[in-house]
Amino acid sequence: MKAIPKVSSILKIGQEELEKESVKAYLHIKLRHCESEIFNIAKKYGISSIEEFEERYKKGEIEEEGTWEDFFRLDHLEAEREAVKRALEELSVS
Image (cartoon, rainbow, N blue to C red; front, side, top):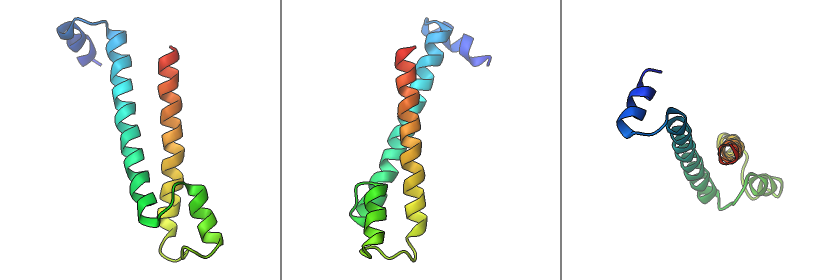
């Protein structure tokens, strides 16, 4: 990418550091977005996790009809959040 050398020159930091910090910033934004969506779904159903959502389904406390989209969305978001956290940990190690 042509922008990286130009921006690193302007900021007077190495290209590798700029790339690493850029990826880190992106991952933090992605993590906040996931956590925000997770919070909204959890608040909507009064739950704290996909496991609790599933348990409340089993107990009949949450109707399955009309809620499956949120259930699968929450499952996806929790998996994505964990992947982003792993990626952030990897950046911290390297």
